[in-house]
Amino acid sequence: LKNVLIFTDIGVDDTFALLYAFNHPEIRVVGVVAGFGNVSKEKVTRNAYYVLKQLNKVSVPLISGASRAFAGDEPTYYEEIHGISGLGNIETEIEEFTFYNFDKVFEIIDETEDLVIVNMGRLTSLAMAYIISPERMQRTSRVVIMGGAFLVPGNVTPYAEANFFGDPVAANVVLENTGPDKIVLCPLNASMKGVITPYIVENIVSESVTEIGSLIGKLYEPYYAFYQKQHPSLNGAPMHDLLTIVYVSNPSLFKSVKRNVTVEESSYLTTGVSVADFRDQPQVNETFNNYCEILLDIDYPSFIT
Ligand code: BDR
Ligand code: CA
Image 1 (cartoon, rainbow, N blue to C red):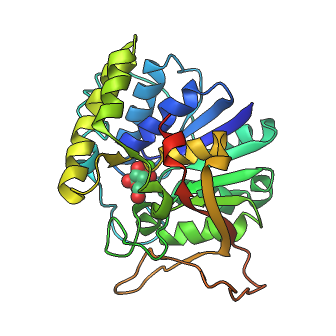
Image 2: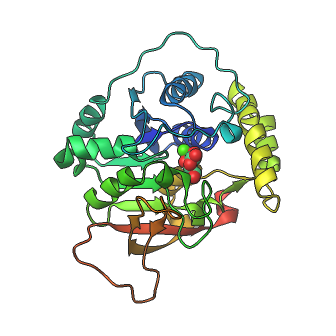
Image 3: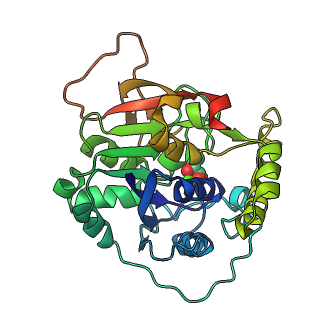
């Protein structure tokens, strides 16, 4: 059984990832940290509670994360992609709920052997954990991150991917402090290939015997419509965050390379861009402590089955 602590900014693709994680027999979700990103931290926290409730998993700790990036202005939110609530067309009528403050992250780290952290949103909350308790963070066995775009177009700017662009300073804190051979990055290079088609969603909806099926339809609709407008050549919508959890359960589906990775923190054109030396003989700088496995491709036929 793999113990997974999820940092999320729910989000349509985040929700697909959570549904997958909670339904996978080999994954045990030990906590969900809600931070700003696709929508505000308050909305993400509500959404996380809503998803836990639908899955009968409210006993899983829901933890309050960061509400803005380390540097820069107020966050930009992406309601045109994820819906006003962040959950597509779902209306989240929910009762009062409670959540833990950030310290709970450390309690979970102390209590859990072989903990895998999966980060599906801006890196701010996770970087906070490294800043507050760097020694503790060394107890984790793997850190899987949806973030970056290497030598391919970005999604929020021509060059940068949203999770790195949303807090490049935090991204570097995580990259530089995790230690060698622990980080797996799932950048747009791989995540844009994780396309879920309307046909797949229709099948899930029609085969589902629970409420979750119809929720998946409502989540998907506006997200798919956005991607149809932006990328008419895709025959569906890429479920970026889903691939991080698929990696945890089935790493052999991916092709990857190992490189040092840094994120551009402030630059007129390239803020948030992930940089790595992709030459066959990369220049290795021993002073860098940011060696990552970078996922570049996925075995698509196996992914969708
Ligand atoms: C990433 O940014 C977020 O908006 C998505 O949920 C995903 O984690 C894609 O760049
Ligand atoms: Ca996300």
